Amino acid sequence: MYGDDLPVSVTMFIEGEEEVGSDTLPALLKEHRDKLSADVIVIADSGNWDIGVPALTTSLRGLVRVDVTVRTLTHAVHSGMWGGLVPDALITLSRLIATLHDDRGNVAIAGLHSGPAADVDYPEERLRAESGAVPGTEWIGDGSAVERLWTRPALSITGLDAPKVDGASNTLVASARAKISLRVAPGDTTENALACLRAHLEAHVAWGAELTVTLVDTGEPTAIDATGPAYDAARRAFTEAWDGTEPVDMGVGGSIPFIAEFLEAFPRASVLVTGVEDPDTRAHGANEGLHLAEFERVVLAEALLLHHLGSL
Image (cartoon, rainbow, N blue to C red; front, side, top):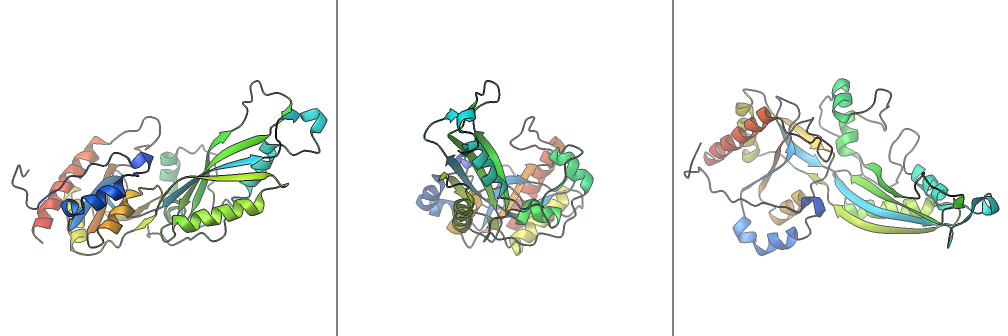
């Protein structure tokens, strides 16, 4: 569209470590601050509200991941000889995991922040289709669907170390380990969330079992005040690219920790979080894909954004 005659100056920054924590990014931003300084920063790592409906992402949850190990024995022992007196580590870990949610499925860790979400309706049929939930699965937690997905904490067990069922012997398991993934609501901090999670685990581990909590990684949540000329230009560009359909301000339940790094490094910049994903992209899952017609609109929108920013 523009060739070499861009209406604004553009600096490209390609970040390839997001999936492993972006550990080197803060140092790079500090070292090359002058080269990367900008009035507007476009981070194209998010998605759109629906096929045919663009979006600007204005909030993202943060992340705290820990490995939790429970030990009840110094070594495995015969389940018949010692069962009924000595607790095994799997039962103990299972009881601990069960305390992390209340009966309705809300995260039961005291001290975590929750907030309101955008006034957006997420239809039941879309939730079912896009999540892949089986027909009988009931939703967990309280509040609107988008609050539970965007602005409330969420906790999952993403890994478990234990003997396999096939070939398991009649022994009491001495230790068991789980990976806990805690999504942190915008407005909270990972420091607070980690402290609250540790306190909960320590208070609820049963039968005097030995507990070890090892931090794996963290990523700060993000809330963006999407007002001002740059955001107006982005909304205009998206509306034009989508033939008159105005973009939705939406949240994302996942985490992009480096957004907080850019906001901290360049506090005066307008940070626009856009992207090419659609609700059926299936990010991080099998058969991850891209809707090519939406991708074409996104490319057009980014070009139109340069045009409108050049007119400011």
